[in-house]
Amino acid sequence: MFRKSLLGAAAMVALASGAALAQETKKEVIVNSDGSYTVIEYPVGKEVVVNLTPASTLATAKGTARVVRSADGTKVYFDMSDLPATVTGYHAYAIDPAGMVTHLGPVTVTNGAARAEFTTPMNQFMLAVSPMEGLTAISPANTVFTSAIPTGYAVVPKRVSENRTAQVAGDVRFKYDVPLLNISTFPDTEREIKMKFDGQLSGLEGKAYIDREDGTTKIRMHFDDMKKVPAGKKFVLWTVAPTGEYVKVGQIVNSGQRDEAEIKSETSLTDFGLFITVEETEVMVPTSRTYTVFRAS
Image (cartoon, rainbow, N blue to C red; front, side, top):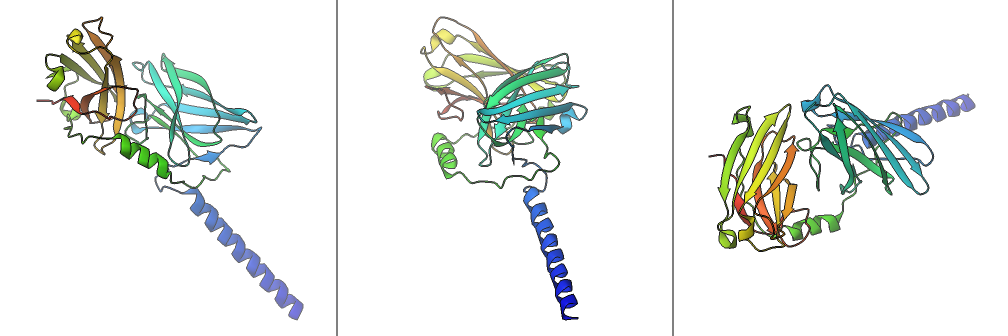
């Protein structure tokens, strides 16, 4: 009788331990309730197929990524289809447990399909695809695909990187008061917004052309009279999301030899502000004062 009691007690303890382990595993997987955090560790010598979840603006699009980790690095093979016919390219990113974003490279889109291959030294990461180059953080507003959690894998706990936070905070030296353009009120045809520079760049004029099309917004920025400003300056065009996140759209380096120049890009943001800084070096966050801000009216 005593032996049976012991066996029964042991069984109950094992059952309780199993239940606790299951609860702990479930808690570990769901880092964000919306599923937006999907960093996993990839095993050596095994191919892992990751489904890419499309944004609501690309609901019919499909995408997968094959990830193969070896002793000397990790290969990532992207395969996407049913993309908008007007899209010509995206950018692929890997995000580590601390939220650090690494640009894997550009992805060329041809006739609504795209394939690309990249190598990274990382072994713990999630994947994202964006129409924008130079992202320092990802969000639903600036991505068109994010990786899902493969069956049988648990996410890696988030890691706080104090150095990364301090670096970003230290780089942003100016407060940017940039109004949203209310893109939803723009017509379906391309809209022109004119602006003029001030301060030491007085005399420089430019135009931005905004065109909403198939879930994306195309941005084309045209500069006039470039010879009026000092050579070697980097003119950087930024978007700012309603959440306050800055994204580098593109840049032009003034060689002093041309009078006109142009930046072309696109974004999946449904609304944003648009502004220009003039930088001395390569930057991924704005560090100078604003010389012009775009206003819809």
